[in-house]
Length: 291
Image (cartoon, rainbow, N blue to C red; front, side, top):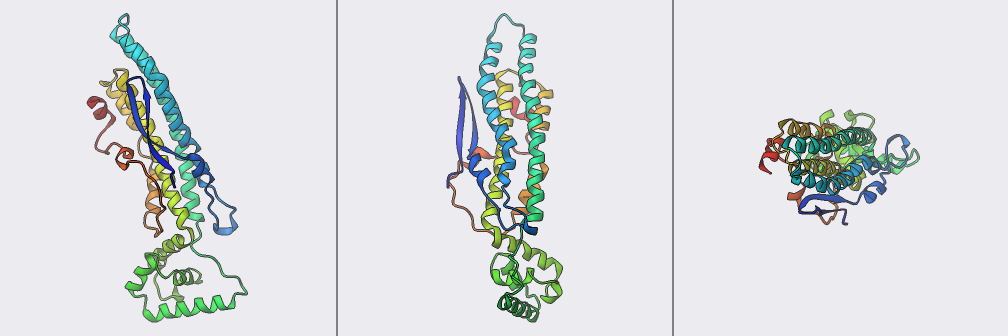
């Protein structure tokens, strides 16, 4: 599956690397088997704002690079006039980016809320599935007899013994399994992985796509500031840091997904080094000064 690839947008002598995503494929991915009879969920449809920011950033780069070059090279303008005109362009970019990031934050919050409350960790048995209910009882009895041995629980947490995982989670009380609440909670993650392995992997990709869109916007803003000879503007550097700061709920979703055992998808990836954000210890001021 090819869902992302490294791209370079060029405008004159200037260029920016970014990770391009197949947004249509992400939007079309269905998640079924949700809790409480929820209809099929399409989490990728909530990435529209991220897609739009990335596409807008590419358009801004192509459009404004030439304008900033013209301003910088205009010998009839004073330094102050050049700075003012360049800053007007950057202000337009930052204003649009600010609105986009606000929308992106709300959209990833929606994905987080639905994923953490809606992904069902097991398939319920039909009331008339006598054999299934008896099998669950036998598996829970076996667990009680083992006293919740750490080795067995560890295997279940890592995605092994899916039938036993389902039997635990279908129990009306953890007391029937011989496990404590913490063990059951850890096993629930394994249940989600067993029921929704592909969905969890796709959600991880969606978090990455959301991140990459934000980073594309940040890189474009930094490059435009450099082209416009605004590298000494500490105020602009701080604004870029604020607008394109890490979105906390995206990190929370990633942290929630990370320990769920899944089977990795087979992807054709871009160079991962090109998709990494500027280290948290580096500010936009630092990057601007190094440009």
